[in-house]
Length: 113
Image 1 (cartoon, rainbow, N blue to C red):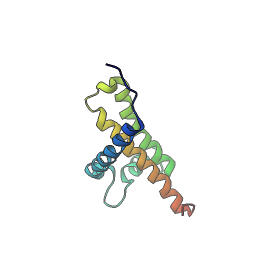
Image 2: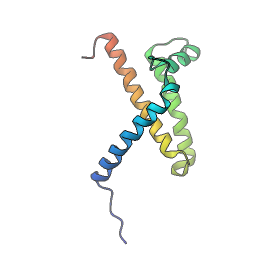
Image 3: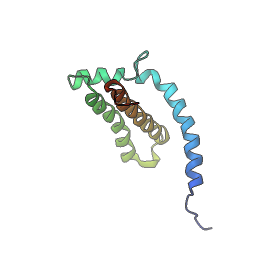
Image 4: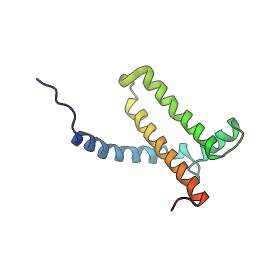
């Protein structure tokens, strides 16, 4: 039996499936990411306590730290981590939240749209 290299089709199939999984994960965990209508509540409050301010840079550092805990676990356990798939999806959600944080700042500054 010969091994065939993964195709672009495989990437597209996985991406389509995972987009649904990521949105489901965000919906399920949304309450732990924010508070009421404030998407960045947890990042803001942690930044206030640790960084002493709540600017976007401080909130981004907090978000990056949250992401890093997943990378540490994955680097230690690799693909054998029983939570590997969920950790990878969490990382994607955090990256999307970081993009929202960036765009929110641009909206506030009037540089987006």
